[in-house]
Image (cartoon, rainbow over all chains, first blue to last red):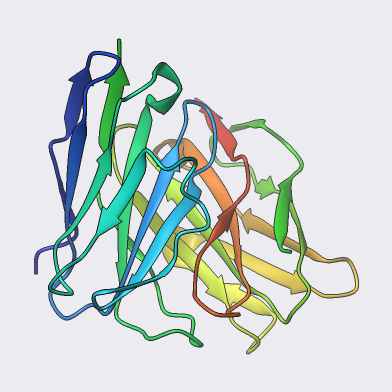
Length: 116
Length: 114
């Protein structure tokens, strides 16, 4: 079956532009996560949804970052007024489980954002 | 707070020899621990996970890891390295408190020498 998909795979933005990154989770997966992976580093948690509810956004680095999942399936991560430090790979993951359990998170291929 | 420390940023082994990638964790709660692998230009793939069942966990591609609470360690091993094992490996912890967010280590790059 289809895995987690992300689009676009690559995005180049000029500093100050707004960008929107899309994530299509595996059908039926309740939990959805966004992570940011800087070059040479491990992924870092950004935010978490359970269905359409955003339960944790403690990892969002600034108020320029915004995520939504209005119908509990597709999610969009939006970055306003991009800065060079936003350059990274943005990973989306989904999991079948509700909180309190530990099921596998399935990762998408990521969107590589380069801010020039 | 939870964290993992990967003790080696880069490990090189010869093909056919054993692999050891070291990881120590810190968690306020009974942790769930994972190893993920990331091949170049590919997504993260789960190798194995520990969730308070058997302390010796077997994963895919011949990898295994042992949870040692007394040493707060979760080292990844494989008896015989294959060229296809060359990749970045991440040790990961989740404490299940509130949500399942994963905390990744900084990664270990495994190089296989022919």
